[in-house]
Length: 297
Length: 319
Image (cartoon, rainbow over all chains, first blue to last red; front, top):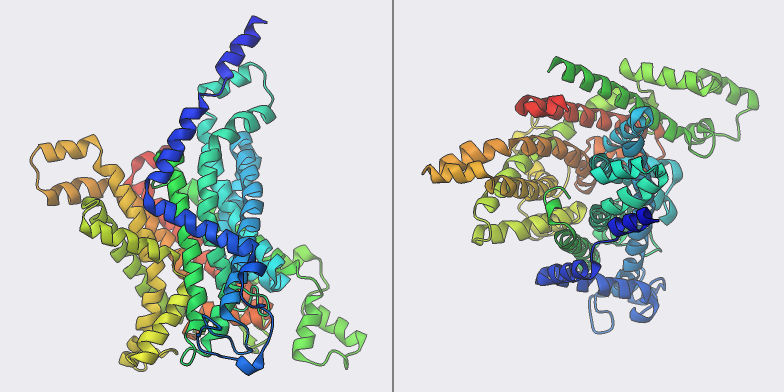
């Protein structure tokens, strides 16, 4: 009975309130990080409440007002079939965020699990997993996505599958490295000596200790995924009209570059803003969670 | 070192084998019969009898077990026989022979620019941390990694090509045919392709340099009264040179990935543009071959990086 109290004493979490306060203080210290967070929240708001925020229906054709220049009626003008560009941009935020979040959570879940297995159990299985990841890392992300899209075709679901396929190895590699180093700690040895199951060690100790870098990686990856989705949609291989996606909007507006430059330029600005914001917040999280990661993530 | 090289080469062979498996079997996961897609693109499916289709199936070896087909494909690839393109109606090998040099002419300058400029910018930003140069370099690098390359290409076409009329907006001419036209056509694509690499390299270089700058031996070097030049070039740079090698290796992948978009924006007939067009035209054998070639180049680059790394830093060899 005494031993139980003792283990509880040692296993007790470190004082959390200070940690949390420190986190908040460091995170909000830099104005630019807060700026990134504000952009993100605004984008999230627009994405979720697109129906109410957008001034027009993004799918409604109106040939009488096609290719209108920016005016009070249409702040950013209209495209070749008369759809309001601003409304399509707002609905595009929804598309980008859905693809970004779904892909990142799917690939993080798979990648983290593979990394944990490979790092903790090692041997042949670990070797095999990591070599497969090495092989996938040899493909440029957009090329792997192209390969998968070539097989499955376009559309949001297939873009998500393609990008997940391409980004799993990044998580697996990072988590594998973390697991290998955390495994060396004395408290893991102690857990093993106490006869804890592998499941308990992996999910009770190794995973929680690897969480800060994983969270940072996820945030930074959100930006990369949105950039990659825009690239695929630009190549007409991802999400295409009438769906509102920023990448395909840049491509569709390309033809009217001389007469209506805003058609192509405005979605590009939207992509940049979101990716910029995710990177800022990711860097802010990194500095607040674990400054030692600077230069690694 | 010999042991390390042998082990690394063995690893590379395993990875290469997995790459061939991924490329081959992903294409075979395709819903539908590859033969029907082939016929519907080349001939008239309705006019063909069942026997004729079966004959074609035997002709293309599609009646044999999947594993046999896989080994056939692999042995073909290593003899330079990738199969035939449906869209271009010629062998993929000869198609690649035409297209690959174009990608090299576009990619190598971009690789050099992004390594040299990125690394120097990173060093400058690290040395004068929080001074005005750093305050220019760091935000620019931030913008560089977030700007979509295809959009940057379009902006350049709009501003420099259409509005100012300084440079041709698309196309490719071999430098051996018309050197100056070729250079003028390459300026925008090369800049476009280099931007992400410059920015990513500058960021990484800045942080690895900053890590080294706080080490004790750097302080000792300053304390000895060495000049700034000596401290930076002989002590700090020498110790952060390993990340530089890694960066150059990573840039190979960045340039190849970016190529797909940049070549498409500027209609440059390299392998990136070929890949896009083949996906759009369902020319699967070409997609498969281009993907494989790109992975092979990056794998080789990674191997060179690892070996250089081990040569520069003996500690690596023993882990």
